[in-house]
Length: 286
Image (cartoon, rainbow, N blue to C red; front, side):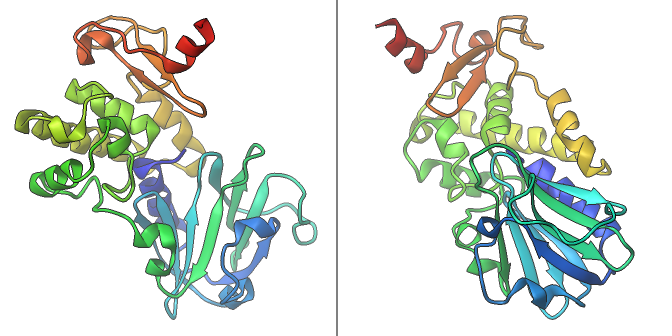
């Protein structure tokens, strides 16, 4: 799932490439992707792209006269910028991974695509980003929150710190991958309780959040959209590295599996050398 650094980089790329261009037309190939019906997609035609912004993990393309295309890429969605499109007619509904296409006046534009069968990619055409339910509920941006704000938000919700850190109503922008990286950098167990963390642990977590996300944004800025996924993978130290050595201590990176997700961690760096119970595997053993 694209998280804060990738969405920030996509916004930056759109600012460089699309701002100032006039929209030729918007084509919707998957009706399920568009979560609003007023204004209609045709309202974008003829408008100029004036900005691209990030709200947590939401990407917003801004058009003149205060019209916004707000997108949540979900787990398998992505934005592909095209310098030109293949010849042929409009998109055919229900054919292929393309859900929505924005054509610009110079022949370029971008596609919103979604792989797999879980169609959760969401696009909203609104006059105010706050009209998007997910945006309205966002907590402070994880990369912008100062220590006092960060500590207050973290301790406002009792739960395992991994889950609290990825709760977008607590702090906006952190998902499964970067929460693993942040907790590893802060040397904290993903199962530590958020309201029981010491002041030093919260400070370490705040510092790690800024450093991990900041480094990821720095690596991603200037990359083309097609290169961002590879850039993300190359910068990970524990996430998606089960069975490989931890680059800090050399211990083996372990995994805890859940019904539809998993987390990775280093026992030596984060849990005093003790492996965490993998609940799904435990049930299988019984």
